[in-house]
Image (tube, rainbow, N blue to C red; front, top):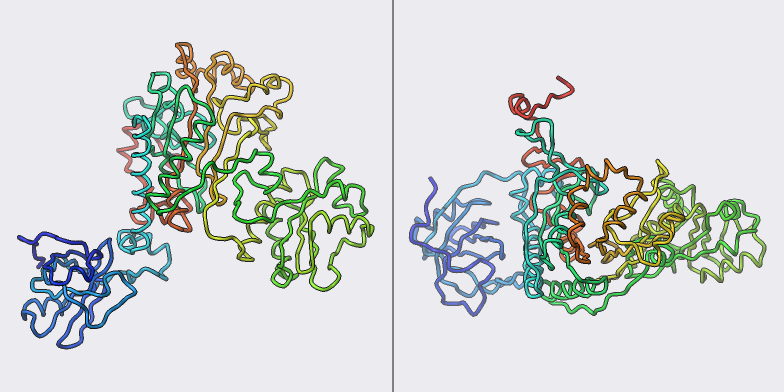
Length: 591
């Protein structure tokens, strides 16, 4: 039978007690992490979210209390009162390791069955089983610490924006479906049978309307939803630190966000960030690192060898250049002994799996470099390749030849893979702004021009002349902030001119009917005086993942989804009964 706390009230958390507390009477509550029975001596490690402290029971302990301690098992919930005393056998690996609590009152608040896995920090249990019993998994300190960091980030953000004149405003969760790059989650309406709400991919349109409403500085920790395939840094539902400003500029928005990250790093990690952050154009980032979210903590930059090999005898290289593509390479310094021929074969299969036709290489182990295509190049051409790449004995040079849309992202991905294999990525944090994004990108399947960000992004004024003649030259007033190769946030200055917005819609091949159906209320609002404005959406979950050193968003999300977008603990999504579907006017195809 469970006991009650009665008149006992927790005075301290388990992880708070130190040598300075010796002699103090305390009341602690928590879970049994471990019980050790040494006959006339029993020790219990009591755990809460702050840590573990040792409870001590001996021959001086009241017999009834001693018997309760004897019967306690892992994950029992206890309330213990006692006197803090110095431990005879200290454990300096934990903060409370110098003290213990000599218990004089013990309540067993709840008993527990043997859990399906041991609740320890470094769990070897499969993630699938841990996610099925997520409420038990969340008792582990690493996950609790991650969620505490997440909470601190959210608080720091709210405090910072409040101090800088932002107003927190909630926007609707049930909205009109509008195209934002991913599939919407749709919610059927019972009242409007046959019609659907969408869950917001972001509050984009609403925060722009708030600017038109005169709220010149808006902030929201917004829940967002995207029906897309999952990976380590993506969940179908996530939290965005969403902001928008009126009468602003790109430079002011960047400055405000740099201030935000200075505050977050100071309050959460106790670290000072240097600002301003480095800035790269989209073109620079792609050409140097093969990515618009480059990890800048290490070098291994891409070298363009197209001019050097455009007329060489190696057809893979020369033909790629002749067809308008390029030949580019990265150099893995001092890697020849690690990147054996077998390892390079694995890398070749890897790049084929992400779209490249293959991988050429120079492996320089002995005095002379080993290179399969050397015989097709003149000595002058080969020496020029060595000089331009900066390759030396001990290095490996990896080449990709194809159209730029294949070469650059392939080498960007390969650069990260090789760096991880060589273990050359240093610890630390490296922010970089990416600016001057193309406004349009061509859809590979349809050949149609689509907006790289969204159709409300303002083009740079000097590019407006290309809207009709050469869409590929139109540059957007858009900006991303990346950290250690992860995109943290994305934003832009918005179009506020009614005529220009109509022109952008036409450039994206949207008909009048489509414009009205998808964006009519926003376009209508533009007729009534729209201030210049812009903003950003910052991924709270991704910040938490990077600051906590977690490997996946699942480790900073209380109840995450797995790769097939299901939640294993509650077995969501799940079928619903026919009566519920009938009310909504929905009939399943299988019926």
